[in-house]
Image (cartoon, rainbow, N blue to C red; front, side):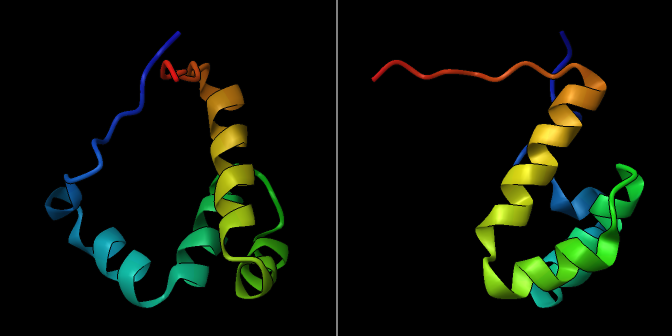
Length: 75
């Protein structure tokens, strides 16, 4: 299994992604969906209605595609 390439607070390494995620979240979801082979427009529209759902779906797709394991924290 592999891990995520980027840490949570490393947006300064790619400022365009940081700006896009801050000011146009549906555009970022559109690009992420396209890069995972999913319909970008569907995820963009879905992010306007249910903002968290496309993120969860795309993260799951990325984990499956790149073999990234899910980290379970003890409760």
